[in-house]
Length: 186
Image (cartoon, rainbow, N blue to C red; front, side, top):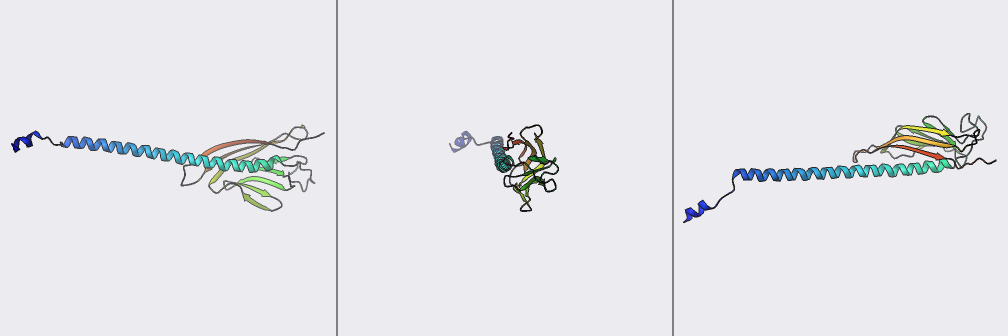
């Protein structure tokens, strides 16, 4: 009877074991790929959010000061805005000059892929972008003038990206226009 019992019991074949291990390996690999994809997406979202928050702060600081700029009626030899007496802003392709609401001559410019502000009274250049935010292709344009009796405006273009090993790289192209609050009165 014991011989019959052994013959009737059926074991697992080698083929069934190989199929089961293959299915298990496929599931583990698929789940791992999904997890890695989710982690990469999360890092990308965090990098973009960090870049956005930093750039919002930077533009808030810049726009507040640029909006409150004054006309530069100083002596042309002492003028903040070279050879443009009576203007609010003067922009070369990569530097913006103006006199702020406190009468200080101010310059915004990029150096070593960081955005800086220079104030004549303190004679120091201070970076306004954090170390991990890099700026490229910074360009300033100014529109409007006293002769045309139009409100002056500064248009800013730049590429910004995060340079950080812990986060995915986030890049953005930024364009912003800021109008002066200095109105021409007659």
